[in-house]
Amino acid sequence: MRLTLLFLLLSVPTSHFIKGAETEQDFTWHLQKLPLIVSQRTFHLNSPKFQAEIKLELNGACGIECQKTLPLPSLSDLEDCLSYETVFENGTRLRTDVNVQGFLPQAESENTTSVKGRLRQKRQVYGTDSRFSISDKQFTTKYPFSTAVKISSGCSGILISPKHVLTAAHCVHDGKDYIKEARKLRVGLLKIRSKGGGKNRKGSKQRKKGSSDAQDPVMDASTLNMKSLNKRSVEGSQNHKGSRRNRGDSRGKPSFQWTRVKKTHIPNGWLKGITKDVALDYDYAVLELKRPQKKKYMDLGISPITQHMPGNRVHFSGFDDDRPGQLVYRFCSVSDESSDLFYQYCDAEPGSSGSGIYVRLRDPRSKKWKRKIVAVYSGHQWVDLNEVQQDFNVAVRITPLKYAQICSWIHGNSADCTHG
Image: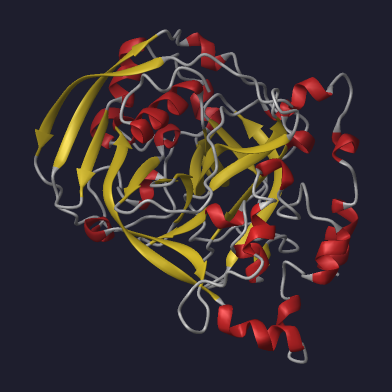
């Protein structure tokens, strides 16, 4: 039944979701000049204690309604929050103060609109579970699903360069101290190994032809089609006991290949000593891997307003705890947004926190559809709503400032991060 519903949904062209005055131009990645995040000074801090327990649900966080009551941050406030800590695998901890150039604080607050006329939903799995387990190796090891990674602390993340992973800050730090698991943090990537331990090279040249983002076959709700799903269901068709094909493929079952994390970057805005409370706006972190990966990664993108997302839909994949060993994909609508956060309808369970949320828009140069990461899934969080605690699915948007900061972490400087 669920697959039938998925077939019906995926057979509807993207153009059917365009309403009113929205045009193809609205669904395009726009090149933007970025503010510069320039390092001013770096100094040593005491090594972390690594004694905190991971908390996948946060209480008392300032959500969208709370943010609307706050004054705009000053440039000094932003510089304080965008300064950051770097922790190395040997326990060395550094603090880097930054200077923000070419940015007006009101610019980001104006780059958003409310999604009206919708009721926000509680998270968890409500009604029919709309998640899909990506258990067929032909899907799990192909872009974009192959960019999803598992963090040894119990979260998910997404590959944003050959050696960098984007995840949620609370997956490594509780706001006061680094969690116990962060002392020897590892990242797991799904890979297929043949029975003899080597890589299966048969047909690899044909698969490489479709490696570009615009040409990726049947890889998410934006590109899946009925023909491909009938051949290889993204949810469990390979589990039929009588399938000769599945018996032959069992030796190539995907498994995690674990890589040590070399260093971790966290914005100061996440630290309670800076904000006096957990600030969901800064619930993101970047992990640098000890070894670069050969997998295709997903590019960062500046989060557009939801009116410029086809169908107001977002997508993400992660490793939900209730489906051990399985990559879980979902897509859903955004229900409300601010300049830094949005709430969405996606079903999810603990373990999916830190997943990279992406959308597909047209590249203005190639005119082809391209996926980019526009937010980090913070998870099931309790936020203040008219002085009452309510729980929602929360995502941290990638704003121009955050894009510039994450880009500088990837490249090691801000000179390579002038446009996004």
